[in-house]
Length: 284
Image (cartoon, rainbow, N blue to C red; front, side, top):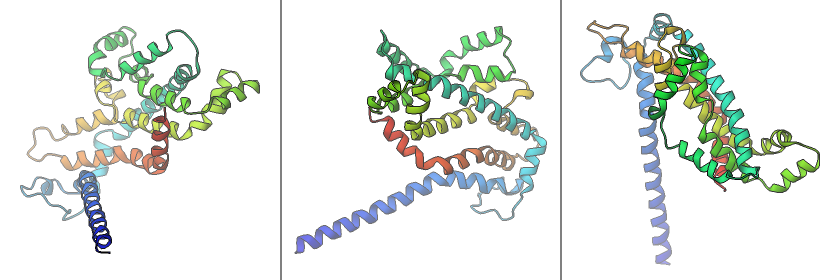
């Protein structure tokens, strides 16, 4: 009897410890987001105080108006939307078709080619950007949407996730589709894609996030303001008051808040699909 009581007390204590740890981790994760939002509505003088304030003493929503008017932020938004949409469409198309080939195709060297694709995950853009930039420059793609989109049109991560998701689907469904007269594209459209919705939502959200947050390549290929995107525009905000005594960190934070709104909205809408998508992709 005493052992049972002791066991229950231990379980209760461990439960409370887990709860406290979960709360602490959550606070650590959300505090930078809170600090960004709080700073975005502070005055320039309050931001520059030696002892930072946790809560704004006065609210200044005009910081957002200043960002939208001074930095041509709406134009940066449009450029980012076009670039991200182009990357998303191309990666979904190429990734789905390539994943079908690696999952359901029967050709020589299939596994070797797939390992080469996985190898591409280990090579960062910073290693290959020089030859890619030379090619784009020779093709006249500097300061163009095509130059922003084309180098990111294929994603090894997308191919990897979709291949694993297709492999997790019973082959009998694919065979039934072929018996009903579906070709390869028909099998992809009517069988594999509908049964991989959760994975598609997951990798599409990741692709959108990567495209929306892209900085290195847009900074290199689009030097003109006409094709400048949000991430590069945010970096330029620090030069708004260059040479003056007061820095504009409050406006930089306001711009950052405006920039993350689409990501937050999409995550809230599709978060229920993310865990399901990752678990299905990891089944094989």
